[in-house]
Structure formats: structure tokens, C-alpha cells
Length: 231
Length: 250
Image 1: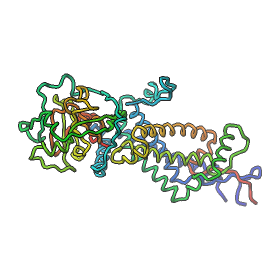
Image 2: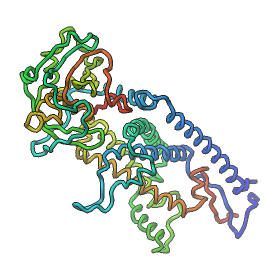
Image 3: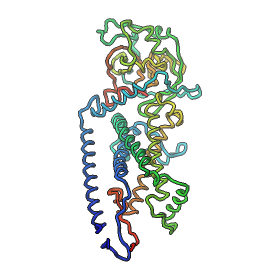
């Protein structure tokens, strides 16, 4: 006999899920990205012209006064730039290290979408919205996750590239030009920032739904799985 | 016998959370330390150090052949006035451009008239003025290249090293002043401008003579230049003393 736990002909085992390096990259990225967004808000405040609207009609202005108040973000342009141009290095280093690690370790195989991912992602979305009863496949990352987690890495690369194009629009003028010019690049950089916020909301909701066992695997690296007993 | 998985995950969770808490503590302490450092020209000194490091990297990578984008006449916009520090009140009737070496006592300053600048080859360029706040304006500028001005009027006892030397400019009342690295000042698109959008500069836009340096944020594009001085040390910079990057260059 090699296990004491045998209830309902099933047993629980500990299964390695997320490597230590990935967990560190993930949790280090969280405060770094938050600081980049916060210092970016301090910078954006100085010329907060973006809005959703048509002609003279404004549906939503980025951002309302109370929003800046919430983050204590007004009249702090110089500070915002200084923090942004400091943390950008740490954000970039962590991101590049993550990509190198996933490439070298082979973890990319779980993350990069394949030709089934889109179909699976639609199925996952329908299931999550209670429109379908077909349970998504049980493996490390389903199609929706593959698409989401790969997109977020590409978005990170996009932020670095658009950021460089805004920061050095003469010495890296060819990047600025390729991305549509200085004004367009600022809009792109801003949209990516909004994208992270949207990702964050969905991510938190999904982690909440998936439960403690799943969240714990991003903390400890291990997940408890219930397996059919083998005799 | 295998360990109980529930028991094992509990101990692993405890260990990981403790590690995480320690890491969060270190991060929090680093943040607290950074935020509370003594200020160096209006910003915590480690951040000032980072701005300086970024500047050095930029200056190492800098190539004068890389030009800022120029636009067709159809893209020209109207000017935007954004502050009047150093240009309050009318242009002094006795205005002249003083050119000096920073280490001199000022008595040896050369005095030039607007006609002296207009006698230099005239250049027109349509470039984008980028305000540090985030807005931009495409404007047509007319004036003389700063490098042509240097070739003709710089004090002859100045022997330039574009990599290491500096130039400072200030308004006649001395209230607004900028410091520039020589390489950026000598860039072919850096102008001493006396026209904007085809007309002589208005007072609000820096009459009679202003700096147009599209390689830098608007804060460096000094209006109503009263004095230009050449030196071997970093000249003071109005916004650079208030938490902004001294270099402020693209």
C-alpha cells in the first residue's frame, strides 16, 4: 500500500504546476506594472485630452477629477516622469527575463496559442457566461488562457516599443514613424495602459471563480488534483 | 509511505506566503526609502541619479545625423502660448543679444543686434514642438542655424568639444534660463528663430529672437533670448531645478 487517503475510490495528489521562476516573474511584475500605471497617470494628468465621444458630445473623459484625487495624481508631472523613467528599466528587465525563461525552459509550449485555441477560447467564454454546459478541457492553460497570457506579453512588448518611441522620438525616430508618428504613439501607449486595467479586472474575476486551489498554485507552485485510484 | 498531500500543501503554502511577505516587506521598504530621500533639484536623489544615467546613455547613443521629422506646409498649425516666465512686459527697448564665455565676469560680452543674426544664412523648417505636458504643435520656423551663429560669432577663446561642453541661455531679466549640451545645440535643426509661421515673432512667442530646438521638449525652447554663454560646466536650467530631467532631449 502506498497511500492512506482513499475516499470514494479517488485520491488526492500534489502536482507541480507553475515553476518557481514564473511565479517570481508574475508577482514581481504586479507591483512594477502598478507603479508604471500610477506614474503614467501622473504624466497623463498634465494634458488629459483623451475622451470617448463624438464631436462636441463627450461620453467619457479620461479622467474625471475624482479619479485623479483617488490616486493623488494632480500637479505631479515632474515626479511622474522621474518614477516612470526609473521603473521602466525594472519593468523591461523583468519582462525580457520572463520571455527568455519561457523560451529556454519550454514553458512557452503551454502558453502560445495553437490552431485549436480560438475555438476553445470561444467554448470557455460560453461556459463561463453560463451559455454552454461543456466544461473546458482540464489542463494547465486552456485556449482562452493561452490567448490572454500571450496577448499580455505582446502588450508588454508594445508598451516598451511605444514608450521608447515617445521617450526618444528623434534618436529612435524610425520607430516613432513606423508606429504612426508622435501623437499616434501616445494614444497607442495610453490604450495599452487601459488594456492592462481591463485584463486585470477579468483576470481577478477568473481567479476568484477558479478558487483557492488554483490561486494557491501561483503561490506555491503546486496544485491538488484528484486522480482515479490506480491499484 | 507518501506524505499526506493536504498536509504537504499546507506547509508549502505557509513557506511560500512567508517568502512572499518577506519580499513584499523588502519592496515596501525600498519604496519608502526611495520616496523619502533628500531632494536633488526638486526630486529624490536616486531618481535624479536615474535621470542622469538615462541622459548619459542617450548622449552616448546620440548621432547628429538623426533628424527630427519635418512636415509639409499643409500640416502647419497655430501656436499655443503656455506661460510667460521671463517675458512679462514689453521687449526692452535696448535689447541686444549678449554672447559671453560663462567663466568671464561679463565685461567682455559681445553684443549683437537682430540684424547680425538675420545676416546669417536663413533656414526655414516645419517641425513639431513637443511640450513636456504632452501636447504638440507643428509650426514653421524661420531663423539661423545655431551652428552657423557659433561659427560666426562665438568668442574666439572658446574651443569647443561637442561631447563635453555646454551652452546656457537666459531671458533679459534672467528669470528663465536653460542649459544645453553642446551636441544638441550644434544639431543642424537647432535654430535661433525670428519668424514663426512666416511672420516675425510676436511677443508671446518670444520676440525678437528665440531658441527652436526640436531635439528637446518645449521647456528648452527659450523665448526672448537675452544672453548666450558658453562653458565647460552644466549651466543652470529653470525646470531642471524643479524636478525635471535637465537633459530633456529626444
